[in-house]
Length: 413
Ligand code: NIG
Ligand code: FE
Figure 1 (tube, helix red, strand yellow):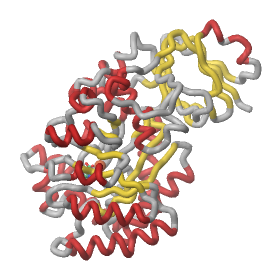
Figure 2 (cartoon, protein in one colour):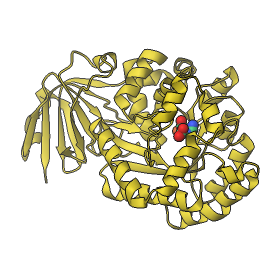
Figure 3 (tube, rainbow, N blue to C red):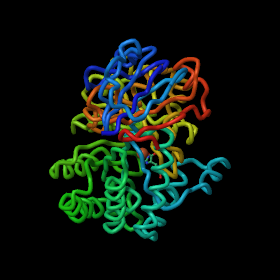
Figure 4 (tube, helix red, strand yellow):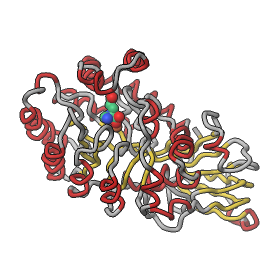
């Protein structure tokens, strides 16, 4: 069995003895062992502790890595992405610079519909290869678990094609991957005035095939003015739940229209975005079991107000952070930047942002027993930083590449 011993770690961060979702004050507790060692055997973390206790656990070690001056963390768990897409959309980026809003661009057939036209014209292989490159890129940036949504097909063939691409990524990649069906991302133009027609297509034509071929783990709906109403979201989410797909939903990005209340009623595992939150919305989500997943890079890219992370945490909420990697609102899957933006713009403490991007992200993908923290028996998906003065230096020095190496399944990338 291949064994790797990492020694002299300046700080081993994210050590947990329970696989549980962190709420409120718990988020600030990252548990760091100073001057530590970490032993990996085969694909798993087998032991760790203080250097002085490294002792005999090192008998059959093939590889030793001296991490002096460096921190070791569990890999990022990015629980919200749209990583499969056919083309970038920098022409809309320019339109936005010139003054058009996200909603105006979407209303003119840009936005999601623009991506859908391109995706339907692309082959499954083309989509697979470009998504594979993005997956490799984010894994080098420290991501070890990721959720990927469909939602740029908006046709039976297009949605199934996307989900089959995600299935192939799952089969080939060493990362943990969760698949989410987001057929209800936008109404295709031909159903603009026939919402029930498209919802019927989702329920009667897409979902049965998705369930039969086991193409998705979750169901998502974009609940927003001009997209899906809370009532429409409820119908679609319930149809997915009949097939065992739990809901994780896009709500309160641009407007507060009742998505939080409906999402909680549905028992959603996570409600994502939350840029536009009323006091009642904040109260409802923080009093529920639902995770609030914040996507600060989307708020940054769209020049929107950031989600109220501080209020959510101070009201004892459970929050996760994710990249929303997609061509329209967050063309970056860099979780290091997400952590930095969360500290800089949402006033999260570095410990809170790291917990929200690791163990709580893992909980949002129901992967908390496999990854998201340093614990014996968990998958060895970890990264080693470059030499840094303190852990706070990670978000402080935003934009710098501070990851020296990434280990996935016990092997260095
Ligand atoms: O999460 N808000 C809806 N969906 C994506 C953006 C999709 C797009 O613009 O292509 C999001 O931000
Ligand atoms: Fe999204």
